[in-house]
Image 1 (cartoon, each protein chain N blue to C red):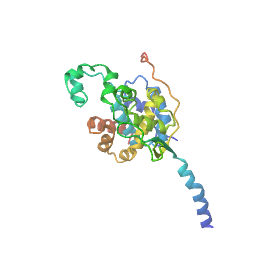
Image 2: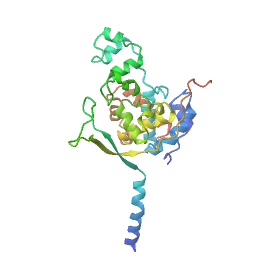
Image 3: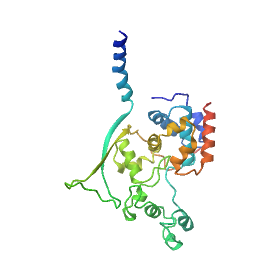
Image 4: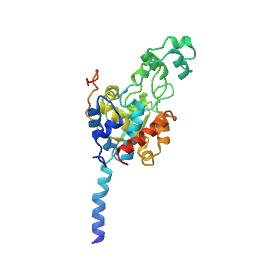
Length: 208
Length: 70
Protein backbone atom coordinates (compact mmCIF):
# COMPACT_ATOMS: atom_id res chain seq x y z
CA UNK A 1 0.00 0.00 0.00
CA UNK A 2 1.25 3.46 -0.88
CA UNK A 3 0.11 7.01 -1.46
CA UNK A 4 -1.25 7.85 -4.90
CA UNK A 5 0.89 10.99 -4.97
CA UNK A 6 4.29 12.11 -3.78
CA UNK A 7 3.83 12.84 -0.07
CA UNK A 8 7.07 14.20 1.38
CA UNK A 9 8.40 15.11 4.80
CA UNK A 10 9.01 18.65 3.53
CA UNK A 11 5.31 19.00 2.77
CA UNK A 12 4.39 17.76 6.24
CA UNK A 13 6.83 20.28 7.74
CA UNK A 14 4.84 23.07 6.11
CA UNK A 15 1.54 21.67 7.39
CA UNK A 16 2.64 21.23 11.03
CA UNK A 17 5.41 23.85 11.26
CA UNK A 18 7.77 23.65 14.20
CA UNK A 19 6.60 20.24 15.38
CA UNK A 20 9.54 18.71 17.27
CA UNK A 21 8.78 15.14 16.17
CA UNK A 22 8.37 15.64 12.43
CA UNK A 23 10.46 12.55 11.52
CA UNK A 24 8.38 10.28 13.75
CA UNK A 25 5.07 11.66 12.53
CA UNK A 26 6.06 11.40 8.88
CA UNK A 27 7.26 7.82 9.23
CA UNK A 28 4.10 6.77 11.10
CA UNK A 29 1.76 8.53 8.65
CA UNK A 30 3.42 6.76 5.70
CA UNK A 31 3.06 3.45 7.50
CA UNK A 32 -0.63 3.79 8.40
CA UNK A 33 -2.64 6.16 6.17
CA UNK A 34 -2.58 4.11 2.93
CA UNK A 35 -3.97 1.08 4.81
CA UNK A 36 -7.12 3.15 5.44
CA UNK A 37 -7.18 4.43 1.85
CA UNK A 38 -6.25 7.93 3.00
CA UNK A 39 -4.00 8.10 0.01
CA UNK A 40 -5.00 10.93 -2.36
CA UNK A 41 -4.09 14.64 -2.03
CA UNK A 42 -7.65 15.54 -0.95
CA UNK A 43 -7.92 12.73 1.59
CA UNK A 44 -4.51 13.33 3.14
CA UNK A 45 -5.05 17.11 3.16
CA UNK A 46 -8.39 16.71 4.93
CA UNK A 47 -7.00 14.18 7.43
CA UNK A 48 -4.00 16.35 8.32
CA UNK A 49 -6.17 19.49 8.52
CA UNK A 50 -8.66 17.92 10.92
CA UNK A 51 -6.00 16.18 13.03
CA UNK A 52 -3.89 19.31 13.18
CA UNK A 53 -6.86 21.34 14.36
CA UNK A 54 -7.88 18.75 16.97
CA UNK A 55 -4.36 18.26 18.34
CA UNK A 56 -2.89 21.75 18.07
CA UNK A 57 -0.49 20.87 15.29
CA UNK A 58 0.10 17.24 16.36
CA UNK A 59 1.19 18.40 19.83
CA UNK A 60 -1.67 17.49 22.20
CA UNK A 61 -2.47 13.79 22.28
CA UNK A 62 -4.48 13.88 25.49
CA UNK A 63 -7.49 15.99 26.37
CA UNK A 64 -6.69 18.92 28.65
CA UNK A 65 -9.29 19.08 31.41
CA UNK A 66 -7.47 21.53 33.65
CA UNK A 67 -10.53 23.76 34.09
CA UNK A 68 -11.46 26.56 36.49
CA UNK A 69 -14.75 26.26 38.44
CA UNK A 70 -16.52 28.82 36.25
CA UNK A 71 -15.57 26.89 33.12
CA UNK A 72 -16.86 23.62 34.56
CA UNK A 73 -20.26 25.17 35.32
CA UNK A 74 -20.44 26.61 31.79
CA UNK A 75 -19.34 23.45 29.97
CA UNK A 76 -21.21 20.81 31.98
CA UNK A 77 -24.04 22.48 33.92
CA UNK A 78 -25.74 19.15 34.59
CA UNK A 79 -22.62 17.70 36.21
CA UNK A 80 -21.40 20.91 37.87
CA UNK A 81 -24.64 22.77 38.65
CA UNK A 82 -23.03 25.49 40.80
CA UNK A 83 -19.71 26.96 41.84
CA UNK A 84 -19.72 25.11 45.17
CA UNK A 85 -19.75 21.73 43.43
CA UNK A 86 -17.31 22.90 40.75
CA UNK A 87 -14.85 24.15 43.40
CA UNK A 88 -14.42 20.58 44.63
CA UNK A 89 -13.24 19.47 41.19
CA UNK A 90 -11.49 22.48 39.65
CA UNK A 91 -7.99 21.80 38.22
CA UNK A 92 -8.21 18.10 39.17
CA UNK A 93 -8.27 16.53 35.71
CA UNK A 94 -8.89 12.98 36.86
CA UNK A 95 -11.83 13.96 39.08
CA UNK A 96 -13.29 16.20 36.36
CA UNK A 97 -13.13 13.45 33.74
CA UNK A 98 -14.65 10.88 36.09
CA UNK A 99 -17.62 13.15 36.81
CA UNK A 100 -18.13 14.75 33.39
CA UNK A 101 -17.92 11.46 31.45
CA UNK A 102 -19.71 9.19 33.95
CA UNK A 103 -22.60 6.99 32.76
CA UNK A 104 -22.25 7.78 29.08
CA UNK A 105 -20.34 6.55 26.02
CA UNK A 106 -20.22 3.12 27.70
CA UNK A 107 -18.50 4.43 30.82
CA UNK A 108 -19.45 3.30 34.32
CA UNK A 109 -20.37 5.66 37.14
CA UNK A 110 -18.12 8.34 38.62
CA UNK A 111 -16.52 5.91 41.08
CA UNK A 112 -15.58 3.46 38.30
CA UNK A 113 -12.81 5.75 37.06
CA UNK A 114 -13.85 5.07 33.44
CA UNK A 115 -14.21 8.79 32.70
CA UNK A 116 -10.51 9.44 33.17
CA UNK A 117 -9.39 6.01 31.94
CA UNK A 118 -11.20 6.59 28.62
CA UNK A 119 -10.79 10.37 28.29
CA UNK A 120 -9.91 12.02 24.96
CA UNK A 121 -6.69 10.63 23.47
CA UNK A 122 -5.05 10.40 20.06
CA UNK A 123 -5.10 12.83 17.15
CA UNK A 124 -8.92 12.95 16.98
CA UNK A 125 -9.42 12.59 20.74
CA UNK A 126 -11.04 9.17 20.98
CA UNK A 127 -13.35 9.34 24.03
CA UNK A 128 -15.47 6.88 26.03
CA UNK A 129 -15.25 3.15 26.70
CA UNK A 130 -17.51 2.24 23.76
CA UNK A 131 -15.21 4.00 21.30
CA UNK A 132 -12.07 2.58 22.94
CA UNK A 133 -13.61 -0.91 22.76
CA UNK A 134 -14.61 -0.53 19.11
CA UNK A 135 -11.11 0.67 18.20
CA UNK A 136 -9.58 -2.18 20.24
CA UNK A 137 -11.74 -4.67 18.34
CA UNK A 138 -10.63 -3.22 15.02
CA UNK A 139 -6.95 -3.78 15.82
CA UNK A 140 -7.67 -7.02 17.71
CA UNK A 141 -6.15 -5.78 20.96
CA UNK A 142 -7.43 -5.86 24.58
CA UNK A 143 -9.17 -2.57 25.43
CA UNK A 144 -6.98 -2.22 28.52
CA UNK A 145 -3.95 -1.71 26.26
CA UNK A 146 -5.56 1.05 24.21
CA UNK A 147 -4.96 4.08 26.51
CA UNK A 148 -1.20 3.49 26.41
CA UNK A 149 -1.25 2.82 22.64
CA UNK A 150 -3.04 6.12 22.03
CA UNK A 151 -0.10 7.93 23.58
CA UNK A 152 2.25 6.67 20.87
CA UNK A 153 2.81 8.19 17.41
CA UNK A 154 1.29 5.18 15.68
CA UNK A 155 -1.60 4.74 18.11
CA UNK A 156 -2.55 8.41 17.89
CA UNK A 157 -2.69 8.14 14.09
CA UNK A 158 -4.31 4.71 13.85
CA UNK A 159 -7.13 5.67 16.23
CA UNK A 160 -7.83 8.73 14.08
CA UNK A 161 -7.79 6.51 10.98
CA UNK A 162 -10.25 4.10 12.63
CA UNK A 163 -12.62 6.99 13.36
CA UNK A 164 -12.11 8.29 9.82
CA UNK A 165 -12.99 4.95 8.27
CA UNK A 166 -16.05 4.39 10.48
CA UNK A 167 -17.43 7.86 9.83
CA UNK A 168 -16.83 7.43 6.09
CA UNK A 169 -14.79 10.62 5.99
CA UNK A 170 -12.92 9.68 2.80
CA UNK A 171 -16.16 10.37 0.92
CA UNK A 172 -16.41 13.81 2.55
CA UNK A 173 -12.79 14.47 1.63
CA UNK A 174 -13.37 13.42 -1.99
CA UNK A 175 -16.21 15.97 -2.15
CA UNK A 176 -14.18 18.61 -0.27
CA UNK A 177 -17.11 18.68 2.17
CA UNK A 178 -15.35 20.04 5.27
CA UNK A 179 -18.63 21.09 6.90
CA UNK A 180 -20.10 17.57 7.07
CA UNK A 181 -16.72 16.20 8.06
CA UNK A 182 -16.40 18.71 10.90
CA UNK A 183 -19.89 17.91 12.17
CA UNK A 184 -18.99 14.22 12.32
CA UNK A 185 -15.73 14.88 14.18
CA UNK A 186 -16.70 17.78 16.42
CA UNK A 187 -20.40 17.14 16.82
CA UNK A 188 -20.86 20.78 15.78
CA UNK A 189 -18.95 23.30 13.72
CA UNK A 190 -16.39 24.55 16.22
CA UNK A 191 -13.22 25.55 14.38
CA UNK A 192 -14.77 25.18 10.93
CA UNK A 193 -12.91 28.19 9.52
CA UNK A 194 -9.52 26.97 10.78
CA UNK A 195 -10.20 23.41 9.57
CA UNK A 196 -11.21 24.69 6.13
CA UNK A 197 -8.17 26.97 5.87
CA UNK A 198 -5.85 24.14 6.89
CA UNK A 199 -7.44 21.85 4.28
CA UNK A 200 -6.95 24.34 1.45
CA UNK A 201 -3.43 25.15 2.61
CA UNK A 202 -2.47 21.47 2.67
CA UNK A 203 -4.06 20.90 -0.73
CA UNK A 204 -2.05 23.79 -2.13
CA UNK A 205 1.14 22.33 -0.66
CA UNK A 206 0.36 19.04 -2.37
CA UNK A 207 -0.18 20.92 -5.62
CA UNK A 208 -3.80 19.77 -5.86
CA UNK B 1 -12.91 -18.41 -25.65
CA UNK B 2 -14.00 -14.94 -24.58
CA UNK B 3 -16.41 -16.45 -22.06
CA UNK B 4 -13.67 -18.67 -20.67
CA UNK B 5 -11.34 -15.70 -20.25
CA UNK B 6 -14.11 -13.69 -18.59
CA UNK B 7 -14.84 -16.54 -16.19
CA UNK B 8 -11.16 -16.87 -15.31
CA UNK B 9 -10.88 -13.13 -14.77
CA UNK B 10 -13.85 -13.17 -12.40
CA UNK B 11 -12.50 -16.16 -10.47
CA UNK B 12 -9.19 -14.42 -9.80
CA UNK B 13 -10.26 -10.77 -9.65
CA UNK B 14 -13.20 -10.98 -7.23
CA UNK B 15 -11.36 -12.65 -4.33
CA UNK B 16 -8.48 -10.22 -4.77
CA UNK B 17 -10.91 -7.32 -4.37
CA UNK B 18 -12.46 -8.70 -1.20
CA UNK B 19 -9.10 -9.71 0.25
CA UNK B 20 -8.15 -6.04 0.52
CA UNK B 21 -10.58 -5.53 3.41
CA UNK B 22 -10.46 -8.06 6.22
CA UNK B 23 -13.57 -8.34 8.36
CA UNK B 24 -14.39 -10.14 11.57
CA UNK B 25 -17.45 -10.70 13.73
CA UNK B 26 -17.13 -9.37 17.29
CA UNK B 27 -19.58 -9.91 20.14
CA UNK B 28 -19.94 -8.09 23.46
CA UNK B 29 -22.44 -8.57 26.28
CA UNK B 30 -25.54 -6.40 25.81
CA UNK B 31 -26.10 -3.99 28.70
CA UNK B 32 -29.07 -1.96 29.89
CA UNK B 33 -28.96 1.77 30.67
CA UNK B 34 -27.57 1.15 34.13
CA UNK B 35 -24.75 -0.94 32.69
CA UNK B 36 -26.03 -4.32 33.87
CA UNK B 37 -25.84 -7.28 31.45
CA UNK B 38 -29.13 -8.18 29.71
CA UNK B 39 -30.02 -11.86 30.05
CA UNK B 40 -31.83 -14.18 27.65
CA UNK B 41 -34.78 -16.31 28.78
CA UNK B 42 -32.43 -19.24 29.39
CA UNK B 43 -30.35 -17.13 31.77
CA UNK B 44 -27.38 -16.68 29.42
CA UNK B 45 -26.07 -13.17 28.79
CA UNK B 46 -27.39 -11.62 25.57
CA UNK B 47 -24.66 -10.79 23.06
CA UNK B 48 -24.52 -7.89 20.63
CA UNK B 49 -22.63 -9.01 17.54
CA UNK B 50 -21.52 -7.12 14.47
CA UNK B 51 -19.12 -7.49 11.59
CA UNK B 52 -16.29 -4.98 11.60
CA UNK B 53 -13.28 -4.15 9.46
CA UNK B 54 -10.01 -5.16 11.08
CA UNK B 55 -6.52 -3.78 10.62
CA UNK B 56 -3.12 -4.84 11.84
CA UNK B 57 -2.05 -3.04 15.01
CA UNK B 58 1.04 -1.08 14.04
CA UNK B 59 4.25 -1.41 16.05
CA UNK B 60 4.42 1.72 18.14
CA UNK B 61 6.88 4.25 19.51
CA UNK B 62 5.99 6.20 22.64
CA UNK B 63 6.43 9.93 22.54
CA UNK B 64 9.48 11.05 24.51
CA UNK B 65 8.60 12.63 27.86
CA UNK B 66 10.86 15.60 27.15
CA UNK B 67 10.90 17.41 23.80
CA UNK B 68 14.06 17.07 21.71
CA UNK B 69 16.65 19.86 21.92
CA UNK B 70 16.87 22.04 18.83
